[in-house]
Amino acid sequence: MGKAHYLLLLSLSLAACDDNDGDTPPNQTDAVVATDGGAESDMAIASDGGPTPDAGPDAGPQTLQCAVAIVGGGAGGTHTAFRLAPTLGDGVCLFEREAKLGGRIKDVAFDDNDPTSPRVGTGARRVMETQGVLFALADELDITLETPPDAANLTEARGAFAFSKEALLPQYPGLMADAGGDTETALYDALRLGPERATTGNYPNFEAYVRAVVGDVGYDYLRDMSRFRADFEYDLDAEGYLDYLDEEWDVCCEPSYPQGGMSSFIFGMEARATADGARIFKGEAVTAVNKVADGYELTTANRTVHADKVVLAVPPSAFEQIGGDVADRIKAQPEFQAIVGVKVVTITQWWENAWWSVIRNPMADTDANVWRAWTTEHCLNFIEIPIEPYAAAGKITRSVYDDNLDCAIFWEQLAAQGTEAVEAELNTQLTALFNNGVSDPATVEIPMPIKTFVQVWPDAWHWIKGGTGLSNAEVFTWSVAPLGEEPVSLVGEAYNVRRSGWSDGAYKSSIRVLNEKYGLTLNIPGSTKAARTHRRLWSQGRH
Image (cartoon, rainbow, N blue to C red; front, top):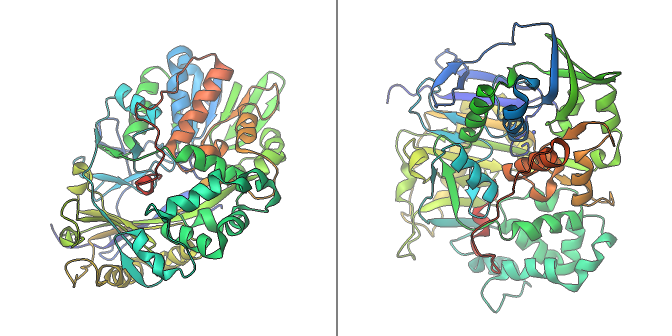
């Protein structure tokens, strides 16, 4: 490979995302800082995976008539257009403020101009074996999914390192080990299945509930063993989170990764929708939605749009950028105000050599190579090394996943100082993580990367706030028709928080609206896998 050109591409949503896993965050801008003084053009990827220049705002008519206007081109909005286009054709109009569709389904490559350069997710990464909707959609769009081999997970907690969470129990004095050898599952069982579950309404938030049921040391252990720290640190509704956890328990255990990244779903749906006549306007933000006598009027910088029906497929934070009486009436409702977003930073890096390939669990005879490591001691929080063949060929790591608010702010501020500051800090943290006394080899030298990409998601996914008195199901039902009999719907993971963090949630939200409001009869495929009573590899899943 040629001269290292250390590049930082900092994508920030300046308003307070994934989606959530697929809804488009507001005000996302890309700033490129390159030490060689050059700049890379931002390219869109065609449905065949090849690069094509981003199209600017459509130069067509200043007044547009649409049967359905869809605001937001994340997973939920794009899926809605994809399903409606075969019957409504050019009556389907989708408006996306960014130059590309996808929202938190955003994949990046070392070289966007090279169609063979592997793309890896800065947000959504994987499909889990029980997510039938995604598997069916992959089949429909001819997307190839890869299942990687098993590998080792390394955990650092309170200064100790181990390849088994049970081995870290001595760091938590007073916590009784589970007789079956799975203390983490035993603690979650107490939260989900114990008698106190019936009294969740008595607790101000999930943290208070956890501390009451399993004690302070149990709370600390669960938080530290999870790479999703925000679940334990944000002000979340106790019953809402447990309701999510009940369904999440069986979203397990074998991850699959699409060739081309998760954006392959977006490209495929976009191509099909366009072929069926749907009009898609990228780089064109909707700034107002108003009720008028004969339907709805949407305003963009380029045109006035008249629509019979409206689907708002954007997360709550995007409403800060949308005016008009429709948006105002939705924002005023308690269900809308009950939703809280989680700030997340991911940092993706490319390397000259796969330095991690030698790091192993010396006590394991098989599946010994490390592919994930998380730590309570450093703000990198969690590193994931793609080992599916497609992405592994790119020598890529997602070196940081962090949803702890203080650490997310730390990385955001450090990124503003430039790529060298980010890379120097990460080199220090990775060196500390992999020179640990338990993995082989004993000494690992971390080189400098050849590219670094920092992604800040101000609202990566969503939960119900503590103390609202609203359930996940109530908010989901409300989102289908937030203005009563008016033909206005909300779509996205943000409104289906029982599936928080997954594109699965956005697709199921879209399917419900399409079935209940547009007369479609889409199925939600079930899993062919048996439900699991043991958690085992549940930590492999989620985002």
